[in-house]
Image (cartoon, rainbow, N blue to C red):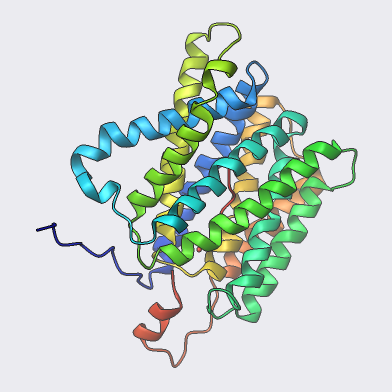
Length: 313
């Protein structure tokens, strides 16, 4: 007889926990973007992407497979899980191509069109309540994005196109993440995402594996790509279980703050006063997103609303 299926953890209303998880995830994503940009200046994008996903996948197999066993591969809606993983892998590829042509801050700002779209669509598609405050927070955060990146200021058109392609894939990834959080386990979704990228880009590795032998530091950076992607997406996916999409979406703008700090530290690109003002608006959007009317609602009603957005990269 087959072993009984253990249902995934239920979604609960713990917004503070969800917000803490998304803050950690955005920091790891900014680190991943910065490391990615460093490596693609020396190596081709398909090779860097392949190594990232292969490392990610091997880490999960080595560390989690002995602990989770069949839970790591068991899914109820396998088709949607695979589509979600492919969306993430292709989004990562387009993100790298965009980073190859544009600075980190501008690239990150463009892809943060996605949280605005998720807030707009979480009502009609996810049947979640989108409050006026959530709309204001999303628009405020997007205004901050415009101040930081100021699109139209001489950005590479092809880089902008790649970034917009990432936005479309990130939208699909985010919406599927929320839908699948009701039936799938976090680790299984993470594993299939890593597996999709490892197979999709790994099969081309014999033709893309070329260039100078990596230094010790570059080997550490390559490993860091896989580790940060794994931990970042784990924290992000977990956040869906504790807070609704309309609440967490504006908080993902913190990714821009971390990107600005790391860009200054690594590439010596100090944010201009206008960009700093935009970061302030982003922070305000995150704080505003936590203000939601709750009077007259029972815990069961709040839990029914719950469960979040992220870039595909």
